[in-house]
Amino acid sequence: VLGVALLSLGMAEWNTPYLALFLLLIAVSLACGAVNATLVLAAGLPPLLATLSTSVAFTGLTDLLTGQRRIAVSDPLMVAFRDNDLFGIPWPLIYLLAVFALFQFLLHHSRFGQHLQAVGGNRDMAQMSGLNVRRLTIIVWLLAGIAAGLAILPLSQGSGSSSGTATPLLLETVLATFIGAAFSRRRVVTIWGALLGAVLVNALSNGLGLLGVNIFWMGAIKGGLILVVLAASAVRHKGGNS
Image (cartoon, rainbow, N blue to C red; front, side, top):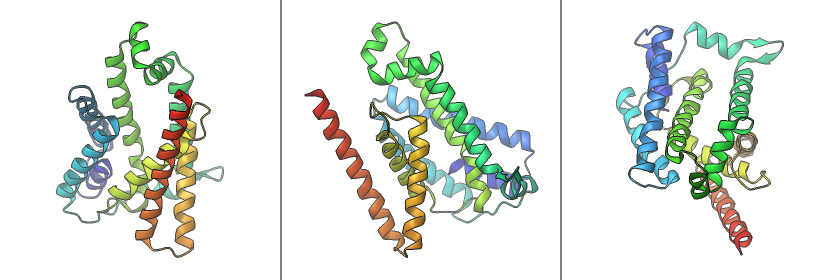
């Protein structure tokens, strides 16, 4: 959301050149990832708690930058990205599939990805096998920042920056991630599972909207689903250990 605000301000009010704006967004994305990495490695916070904490801080910074006002983006490049297609396929969908393919290869079909999975599966065993766990953890958080930065473009192409979008986006991201893990044979988060989870969460939101469900009930339903998914995962993990 902070990146969306910067992109909207850069295009709509600051008249920032595309290259400078791109470099700014990359720098901010890496900085956000570095903050989370510091909280996890130096302060010892659980990753989910660190993410939730920094989300609140970044949302507050976004409100300071924008004054909690809506900033529409009407830049020609953004309009072209939103309205045009390639052989009938919308550019936002092509962009999504390209990002998916990049991270799918990086994390599931490369030696680097195998090292990351080793660290995530058993940190101590990965350390004993000679992997630099600390360095890999930092890289993971920086990649998470880059991934969030890549989401700026499709988020901005709709309505620019709007106050109050951070909380539902965070809720839906968490829900999509844990739902996606349910599709993994090892019950771990995967790129493919995250994509499928995002599709299902979006379908759920659209379905509830078409049924005329109150927006506040939507949040309650999604929060309840997160609890159900986490509880099921915990029970399954406990059963597997026993």
